[in-house]
Image (cartoon, rainbow, N blue to C red; front, side):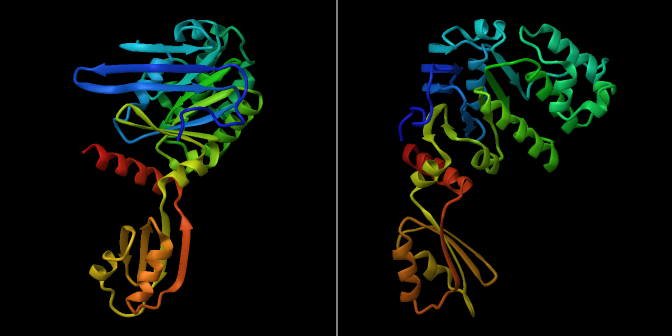
Length: 310
């Protein structure tokens, strides 16, 4: 799969990595990363722990400098783009000012932005109007996340960078958050977010980037990532005792799990595997064959790469 933007992406590049490398001692956090972000895209950045997601975001935001290669944002260095008020960020790292109210903190962020939104609008968008007069050190984890979101969207940024943005939020807050992000994208802003919630990436992103050991392993729509895994899910029920040894010998089998009378499989050739099930003299009930979800595809792709480089 290529590392270019989807066909629908048009316009001048929002940000680009050109053969970027970053190491910390013997650890290659980012290795030869090349990619381009375009206006109006909502892009999910996926990868297991240690894949280089946070390092890539740090480079994009000018918090760290690459060892080699070039990172540019709107044709400028990341620090220049941020100084120009074109980038908003919501990061996991870094605390919030504690001995101030939520309103005071948001007011400060708006006052510092070159293209600020009204404070009341920022509070409402983040769903924190009701806690605006509460001290920051009295907030729950989910409320702190919403305050960070307010700070990231205090002004009209052209690029919004989010690192695990919905951690600690309840379901209602998460839904409201992503509704706001969709609205940002509809206004032509680019949203880049790293997440461990793969269902969010599947539902929200129109482009998915998979990092693994600092390298870009896959780049495409969620549907393309699923197709790349090249496997399908098979599930069915069986009567009587289940011979797992016989099932594990089925052709093209990738994974197998048995729970009570229910069998779940992943197969690289579903037709051959199902044919093999009948060949064992078994009569599966409630047989279902479907494509992998994004989470299963992600696991399949990273595990295949791990096996290839082992």
